Length: 263
Image (spheres, rainbow, N blue to C red):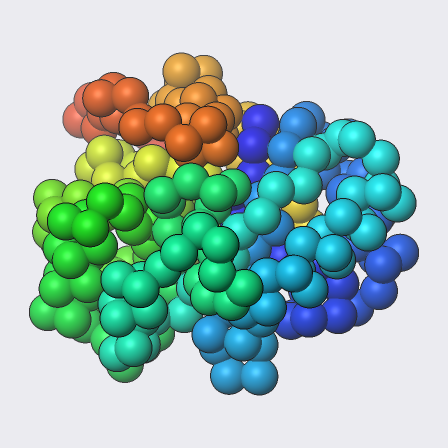
């Protein structure tokens, strides 16, 4: 498996606060079957601007050296959307010392929309980024009310070229009934392209994708689990387009799994 969304670099956002904690997160991810992790610190978000690429690269290498070769740590960022982002991306250069980071050096961008945004602004941004050759990825739409509670909004953005990433612990029920229901509905509508951990620590939000694989396989089949946790993320890391295949809605009458409350 490949984890496309993980806060694993220490001391720069609300992820691990020490190198030792970051290394333990790497070891847990590897033990649970993850071969590569894209480090996605918050970017352009309040105090967590984190756009100094050389600093992030040095920190990522420090964690990799301490943790060992598996999982492989790749560059990325969870990019906060505001009215200035589009202009920044239009001026983006590969050799720039600062700026938003794409996932694993690809043309895929992990975008975090805030509660103050809405469909018109999001649609304009997605359209312009796609025209410019980017692949916008919607981070955890199940946690953004105007997306998760309104799947037609996500469908509209996907029709414009966006992709969607839901959080592993949403699908397993560890974030509560509402997040599980909203994330599962998006999967059943064929609107989810990636499942990632969005891990921040070892206990409350750990980098464990195996539990999500098992939950997805039990409900939608092994092929769906492989697509969302391995094949599609591997295409991103390789800088390739996704397969045309997508998770299909389950047949009517398929029993719902038991929903659990947050731990």
